[in-house]
Image 1: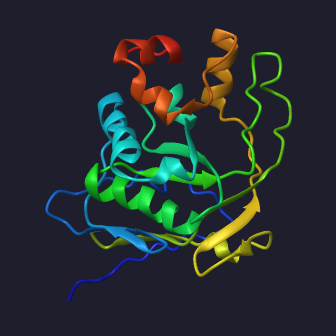
Image 2: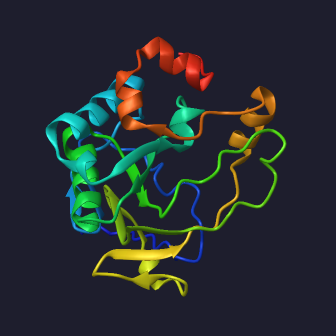
Length: 220
């Protein structure tokens, strides 16, 4: 008999390596967030893979007719170590279905892990003089209830149980986006004086790869 080992992830604990469990060739892999699931393990983001994904969103869906979509996070300053792609989306029309569509396309067509959050407004970029200041708290909306299984190891995270979370549907929640800037980001900003912190996906797709590396001050 095979013993199943389940690792429960409490929602009140931030588990640093939650998404870093390594895929084991030939073993079961399953990931689900809200209504979207996949059995395909994802790759680290690369310029080409994210470019193809954004190009698909622009040209093969009607998402940008309802939303402005921006890249942000580690892809713009720490691409060689980040494991997912953070996106902010503006515009509430058809929101939950569109969040699901963006995740489903990323996971099942491009084998990318994306973290998409609706925000009411874009945050103000920081520089080396403001990066240590408190971050303005904005309510955001995202799809909750994440389940990941690698072989017989299971991890769960359900933000619907957070006290400050407002349930808008079965899986869509609104909550205050309290966070501090990551050490790697603070270090990057202080080293370079500033950093590209928001990049509209249409602008990104129109860039050459060389322009992207120059704009984000990263090495290829």
